Length: 219
Image 1 (cartoon, rainbow, N blue to C red):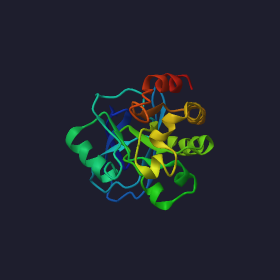
Image 2 (cartoon, rainbow, N blue to C red; image 1 turned 135 degrees about the vertical axis):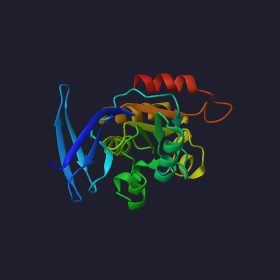
Image 3 (spheres, one colour; image 1 turned 60 degrees about the vertical axis):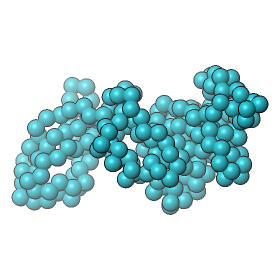
Image 4 (tube, rainbow, N blue to C red; image 1 turned 30 degrees about the vertical axis):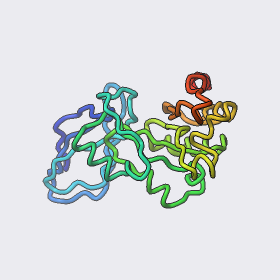
């Protein structure tokens, strides 16, 4: 009796409900469930002020199809939540990516790292993790798969704190067996698509991108 529904639309892989609070009271939180011919849709409404018309987004996961081929790449120190929102408002990308985060930091529940995993609800998002321990990578991937639509493994970053200190990123291109273990562990841990970022090789004397890509595909 308090909500007027105008339409239901598919929006960037999600289901959007256009509705208005027609009551004289503000709604702080509500759970709305709609049964359609295809599915039961659940909408968590965190706030909807009296007289306000708004898009409400369901918890339906990304369908696997992008609305276009414009992708905001993961960039450390840049593609945080505010930056992604600005890009979404201006460019309307088909997919956005967060800045890479440490798998070990996720497992240790580092507050700064977990804050980096906050996301907008209305765009498909790929979240990138890095690490060198297959077990930890699998655990971290499982955690972020509850948030992200795609899990991306970083095997391309050459900066010392990743490739040297953590023996992750592009350093993994020196260890094909470790790559297979990590990708296998991540794929087994999640139900969402898994992608891998790589370089052409560790250095100009070890160009092995094609070999590594085929190994990852088989994992």
